[in-house]
Length: 202
Image (cartoon, rainbow, N blue to C red):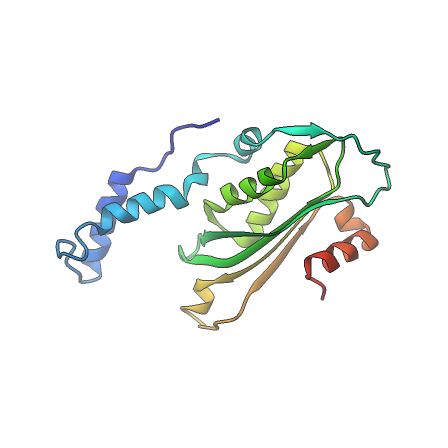
């Protein structure tokens, strides 16, 4: 499913020229004359996810396989994709969230999603103005819609340039967030196993 992006590249070009002028630069000089158009094309690419709701992303990647594994009600069988590399932009400063690694796990409930689809969901969620905490909850919500599993975990580690390159300026500081749903949140044995597998142990 595809739909037209709401991103107005011509408007972005005009605003970038205005920002360059406000910075005291000359947007007509050789090094900057094509910058507004380049930035507009970049924004169209890196913010593609803004054009889709979580429901639409779930529909986009809703191809699943019937689970032929006998999953008991108390099963701890899980599917995990570790260290999906992504980047996003913080909505507070439009600053880059980088060195981002996302690990996603779920316990099948009759449906299994293709592994590449998990990475595609994570990538599309990150292509929005975001908060790291919301990235985790968005991925969990979409995966629940697709797999119909209540037991989902998303662990994200990332560096934030709004913290490393400006403000307090602490290079090397990273942020770890954990979104735990269902048994990952209520079953300590399962959550401890998850932490061990992802290297997120306290």
